Length: 441
Ligand SMILES: Cc1cc2nc3c(=O)[nH]c(=O)nc-3n(C[C@H](O)[C@H](O)[C@H](O)COP(=O)(O)OP(=O)(O)OC[C@H]3O[C@@H](n4cnc5c(N)ncnc54)[C@H](O)[C@@H]3O)c2cc1C
View 1 (tube, rainbow, N blue to C red):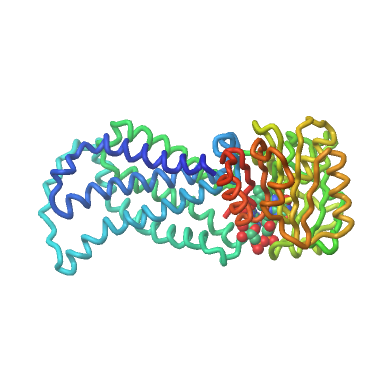
View 2: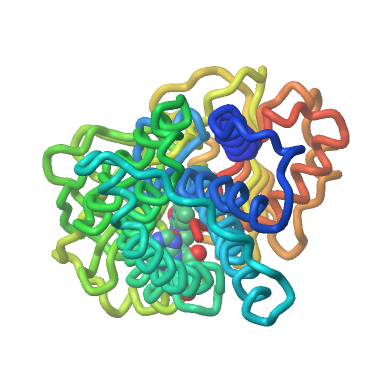
């Protein structure tokens, strides 16, 4: 999570510095609301289109960037924060442009006389851009209204995920409109500066990403067809175990990674951790908890022999770390990456001591004995918490030298945050705490 904070703030600082270097205005000499308005319109416009370009690029799942942001789950979190920043900056941009005009209309401000426009050589690029200003302003304004509604819908969790998924793609159209608006209305002199070069690259990449997104294309992960070979209801757990046999083309996966799985085209892909280690015969297992409308209906809808499509593998929750031992903590269905890892360790042990703390509200004797058998084969010390919640004291008392460990956490976000804060306060280096975000919105 730290990486995405640095990337967000670092990116904003770099673009601001580039703009400052390109602007070459003496800010102290600016006089009057309209002089400031002109400068701030350019600044907010440049920052706005920059963050939206980056958000657009991340939307097409560029898997090769996962290593820099610690996985696709964090990449989506960065995408979300870039979107929120874009929303705040574009609202500011709109107000900076409009508020002085409203004030003039109300008689509170006097508009200064416009300086005469320089005459531009006929047919020059600058003259072509100047002739499109009215169109670019109108396009930008309408794209702004639509984008604000779409972004608010993305942030309102009550708006169902399925509808969010369908409407969110339209932001690619508004992005293309903003790109046109920015090319025409950014100060022409900027294009001759490093800011202009960076902006041109971002606009090109962002536009390519927008088109890919509209065509439902992704840059990361393979798409491979599969057949459902078994469906088992884990009664008393609200969990469905689904086995699939993959067709050729899957590159294999590391224990802890996830895939987007489409069982039904009308529903689209859902992310699930692959709850089995990779084996070359192409069998994979998913454990799917009934957490919403679709996953609740899945036991009725899914049959052996059904077709599915997997996209992936994604994620960096892959148990690499510098600590001398590992401590795994899971809550509820967050157990899935650890099941895969236990299978991988049973097949190829690495001798590293591992303690698994699993806290769950629902547990049947059968599932409990399956977990114990997996742990025994992997030589993992299993600490099960059912009926009473796991507390930090259990870890501190249960594992000697816990400060030397890498901690891997998968479960509810608030539980993860609490555990992280407590352990870091007690001396765990923050970079040794690894967390899978089970939520992408
Ligand atoms: C990296 C990752 C790994 C996951 N692994 C597992 C797992 O192994 N087992 C398991 O049971 N659950 C897992 N989940 C959660 C699972 O994806 C959601 O519970 C499921 O998609 C809910 O779908 P729904 O339509 O039933 O619920 P809804 O009520 O529609 O959604 C509940 C929440 O699930 C998320 N969600 C829903 N649909 C999607 C989608 N298409 N894409 C992304 N997020 C969506 C949203 O945050 C939404 O708010 C994982 C999630 C992520 C991000």
